[in-house]
Amino acid sequence: MGKLTTHVLDTMNGCPAAGMAVALYRLDGAGAALIKEIRLNHDGRADAPLLEGAALLPGRYRLVFQVAPYFRGRGVALPEPPFLDAVPLDFGIADAALHYHVPLLATPWSYGTYRGS
Image (cartoon, rainbow, N blue to C red; front, side, top):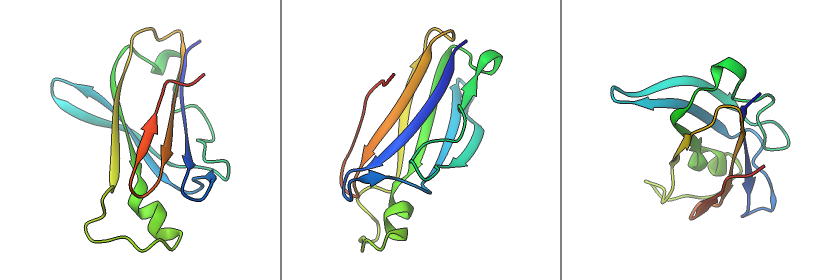
């Protein structure tokens, strides 16, 4: 059974990005449809898979990570507008039977991602 998971590491402070807001969208020809919004737990992870089983369909998706609000909440002085604010990450799911793990490594000025396991 396939599933979609995520986590965020705050590489500025060397810790999980606990409390960061994340939204998941499904993309199609009509635009982006919001599926769910969550806050990451103390380990910088979603408490449960974002999608799994029959809810995980092949297609295009977008995760939007609220990077600037997270760092402001940690007391980081950011300019207005911040260099990074909401970070959108578009990705595709080709085989709904697989596990897709989408991590984000973030600072107020940079981010990286990869397909994790």
